[in-house]
Image (cartoon, rainbow, N blue to C red):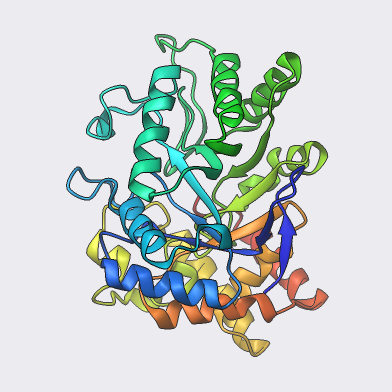
Length: 346
């Protein structure tokens, strides 16, 4: 395994982070514990979750992922051996069941932190993230900003930063980060932190893969110049870049087979790009999965790649990607495909 620091912190994290959103939906508690044990034993020291998980979000499974990780922590008594990140849900009427005070008010943040700490059976989070903006910008499957005249949004980012800074002083969180954020939103957070002389966002968790390189436009420069690390999620684009859905295949227990509504990446141009990337990987003696993940590991603005697996075989293959280094020839050919079919699944 390879390691790096979360920017502007002393926290060392593995370049691969274990994503856990399948725990409680596609993975049982026993399977979740098996994944956690294996990942930790093979050098992964970074675990990411969220209060809204499992995915797809449902009232019946909400919070189950944090509870499964919490029972693992309680059994293994190993909280000092890994870095733990979770996320607070932003306002959205669909997720009303998570908390009655959904959003980022002071009361809501304290309520969410308390409940996540309880489910995870820990006293603190190494990283606490805002899962999506509280305004009309960026949501799952929808990147960018569309102006809505009647939008009732009040810029309270200064208050949010102040609340998170208080939680740091109380020892409940060590640092905070953003997720599904825009360049404007990231800079507003950083500017407010500087203006108030308070803690800065250290990370941003956004989608990034061979099928979605939109982070490179705007956000990559901010991440590098302002020292905010990308936690790249959906690196395999819901499994499309594993190749298992090629030629119209629908594996029985695969996510997109079970939950066809999760069609963020399921577009004809995505399938066309996958075929070209698969041919490229095969021509150079690599699996598509390993090439897709290795591409992300090597980006200078990426702090960690968040992988998720429903089987142990998938987890093992994902972890081996850290050993692969792409040649300049492969990188050029990847860019050539990207130029022909840019960001087919933003």
